[in-house]
Length: 130
Image (cartoon, helix red, strand yellow):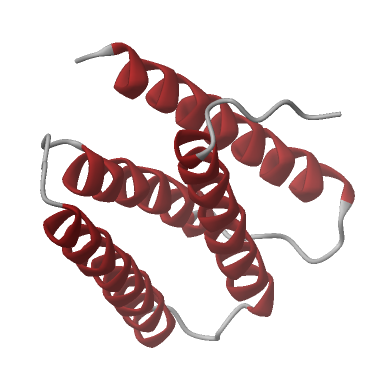
């Protein structure tokens, strides 16, 4: 594993830990709790993002068209598996807990923003934030 992957995965694990800690704190103080399978959804999203990142950036593709196709396929896989997990969870656990849906969708958006920020850094390595 090269430096880019190790740096990405350390940040991904830190973000996952932060979101898990946020869930535990929310459950301690809120009246409407996120169910325990919310933690499973969080770990699923973290693993899925790690695998999609490995798929899209893992091979050293020299052709730009192939790299863009891999990125598009990775985005589609992420969306398909995320929606499938949410649908299976909603059909399996009754009654539907809106707190889980809000937490899961929020985590998906946070992981998506994290992935976009990592891609942005790769596209503009000389960018200095002010």
